[in-house]
Image (cartoon, rainbow, N blue to C red; front, side, top):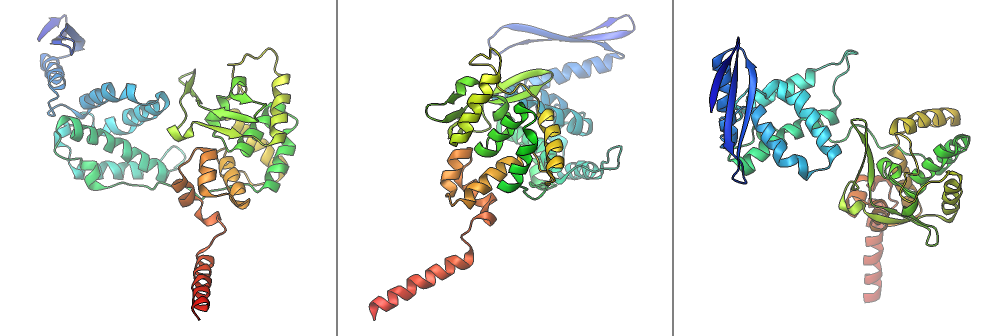
Length: 361
């Protein structure tokens, strides 16, 4: 380790041995004082030794090295943005082993009181997400680097997990909307897949002709589309359970055959819907206004599909297999839509007991 004077600034050089036993070095120029160059040098040593006397910013660099290759690119993109813009400006220069619960409370209050240029606060769901990302860094430090405790966990979360009530269209509302979409075949067929198969937006945009088996009437869901930093990125679906084969209704099989025949020289692995999520949102605006139905989110079409299946009498387990959920999640999130109420359950138990009594007599 060494620092050098270069004109009016200082340069720090740190030499180390990597995990493969190879000698490496890193350096940084432009420090206005020798003391700042030496402070950077010490910070590199703390990182190499995983010494929690390092700054929070330095630990986030370690956290990034540990985690970036282990999670989906789009997930990391979201996590990195939150850490860089909402967490590091507050905690970056603090030593990670000196951050206390009271510091987390102060940060939470700042996030809660933040307003944009229109005076709008962060949503409760976003506040919860911010806290979760901060807590994840501390959890990593506790689990792998010997930090005594997670101050964010001690404080507890802010915000809430659900932002608003679940919205959905009835079949009648969707049919009105679909009629308005028929002037643009690409939009019409995209929304048909979303509503009648209950697939996610990213799953729709990743579909290729090879995913369809028209003889069996199925579509295979095994990937998802994201647009990240100007690039088209195809990833695995949201969860392992999301890998599934969905049986399409007969009319949708014919519609998708018709759609593919309209596409000029499309390859088996080309995307069927080379559109953006913002395009779908604009079309949702246009169609719902023209049809005179309430505006719902694209993801609410998935809720609409699930509510339709519940109305048709299918079980939570069967629905979960179709849409790539866990059955317990279907049971919990859509409990209010299932026809079996507590009162009906109680009456069934009463009838059962009454029948047993009559048999005994």
